[in-house]
Image: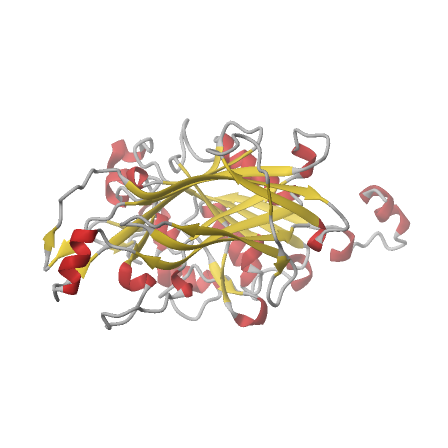
Length: 399
């Protein structure tokens, strides 16, 4: 029934949240206004909030604005209403008890919020480039990457990160994030897509170069930090949906101790809480370029060679800047199939083996404790340095 017919059929011309669902889309300060409405019980009505289904945010300072020297915008800086982005002020209008972390979403599912994060400060020309300088390289020229995402209690009270994408765009302007094709493609699929797919890299081991391993066994202190780069693209689309790279200051960073905590010089168990979450991609069968209605995407994963330290000194033997210890371009295709687990039959493959055509049938399983399916892609390297682990792909119906 059309919305107009619903109104006419209601004798009181009254509508309830069950009659319609609303999608919110906002940029920067406008998004914070929407967040205040969604999560602060003192603002608006519960009935109005109950009508909101999904919320898409562009380049938003969810955890305030930080600048060089002064860090978080001080509460006394009223010029241009800059103190709206002071965390203590934000906590007040967001209905949070403290200003320590105002990226927490309450009273609305954090998984129904999408964070589009810009990674290019150079094109942000406000104040003659002073804003971009103050925000720093790991920003969009105004909002630092670390402040541009949300999280909050999900099902069962477990802390859940909102889905997000990183794109090489500035906060605003002619080359800004709002005007971007990447923003449009992510927006339409998040609002109207049918499938959400997440990629997580579970590492079981990262081996050291033979020379570094020898020094480690000799009792010397060895440190290594790892950068994970990833870029995901949807079939038939010329723009990458998300891209995280070292040169854009957006790569995922993990130290060896993050991944394998402990002090023992023997084998240490992995910390799955620090497994790099690579991407969240939303797929829409109505945009499929194939008659089968299948949806497909590819992701390019790199684990870069780290800067090894031995007793505090850089170990530069056989080091080539920009080298990587793992690189794979992996294709994933999902076919609607009522007979398959979760309603989707999935194939994956490697671009180097069969370009453009996934050919391996994924062995899917149910997700633990929630609706959806998952499958694993093994990663095993015998060379040193190398990684061993599993690419865990999770798929959920997105209605």
